[in-house]
Image 1 (tube, rainbow, N blue to C red):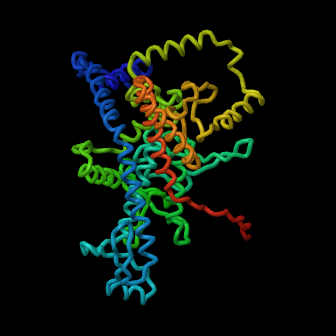
Image 2 (image 1 turned 120 degrees about the horizontal axis):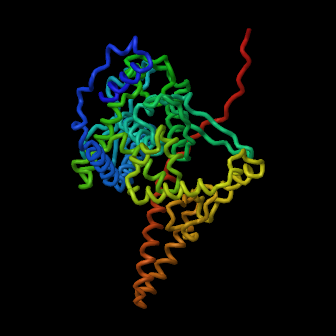
Image 3 (image 1 turned 180 degrees about the vertical axis):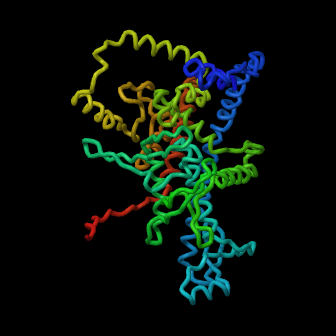
Length: 457
């Protein structure tokens, strides 16, 4: 309000004949603004505390949606192979494939029949096709949100046209995700990680499994109050016979339902909810804490001001920010003017070769360009290490060696050695569990693109 009245004063100075009649003292006195900075700090503190509380629980949530989807997918595959009334065992539970009279009637007309099974112990009828569909979209929404950091509106607006690719000089192809203008009305591009690309490819594969392209659907924008043009939205599903795009409320309800189910077995989730924006804040925190410059994080998140991104980073205290800003200011002062020039071919080649040098024994290192290893090549403890699933056997060998060393250290009462080995074992087992979970993801085969025929006429 005060800014509006200030604008009127400014405009009146430039065009008095038009705006002078509207100039008036602001009805909001300066006293009303007292404590505004304190209230903003308290808001930021509550937001940071929310992120710190949910960040350690994210692996539990991810593991739950992955496990639920895997179980439903494997049970559906087993049930589809079973004949009517056939009894089969899956994960220690006996099921019987059933068809109702309505299903048989649909079969006679050549229609698709939903897959249903009956639990032999409880007699419960499981609509496994519907359960697998719901489990897939819960998994896809969680994975897409946590690996991209997009806003919920941007997630619902993703289309097949949002996927682009960039080919480097050495032939490597990098997948890109183009985020349509949303809150800031500015388009941005996100390089897709392997995990994010897998999710997007899985969504496309699911839509194309019936042999037709992604349906063109119109989406209603609740903010703009308009319907979009028909587009191949990724997050859409059949509602009866009509395809409909996921709404933001639908994704929020899905996350709430997941947290309620987790609360039954994990007390940490009791009274706690994950929102789509929580994934965005955790994504920003992990980006900056892993060494990515904060201005690059701001570009990936679509923030116009670095200060906004800094408010998202939960563990960045004021002391760290102050010293970091002083370091940047000093570095800009001493940097020669000659460094502000276009890159040479040799420099660009070295930049591309950096990605080849990140290969290590157990996988690949995600340390930023031009930075040395900060952990003295203690890769097992390093959060930058991404384990290659093919090296799981090597992890088993390392664990066996560490356990033997731990027993020797305990026998000799080397307490410092015991503490260090236990810490290394914790990191090793955590990385192994994460790698095994990623290795269980089914491979998505997109096929070979065909050659486009020339248009007639």
